[in-house]
Length: 155
Image (cartoon, rainbow, N blue to C red; front, side, top):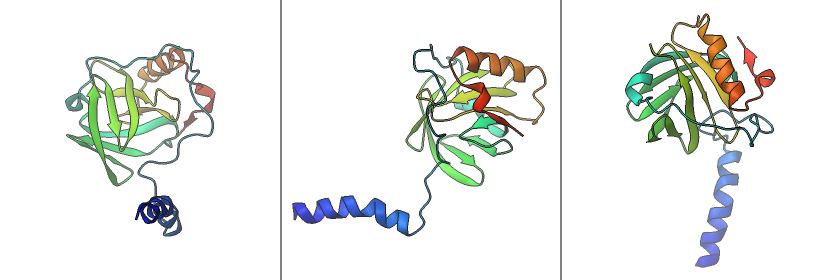
């Protein structure tokens, strides 16, 4: 019985791959995008309510520029796929089992810099697609937190 369970647990991921099952999120970037020794933090006044609504990725690694996102209570729709979203601490979320932190959100909730503190993905998103000077502010924050901005692509 134990052996049968073990075989099932080992074989299920391979079966899902063989059937073409997709990961809940796009794959993370090859190699870490963030210097592990750099300080990292999340913005403590960020809530689900401040993120609610539609966004567009402006620059990213692990999320392509132009990707559409829509935040709603308990979920994020990413490129047409709805994923579970749970706030774990101020500015910190569990997105389908992956950590996503809001490193910076402007005072008017128009532009945000987000990433995986482990360095798997990072992106800057904006509600209008035209962040203007806020893009520079978002990039400065990400640079301070040790993200490799040269690996981010722009739309």
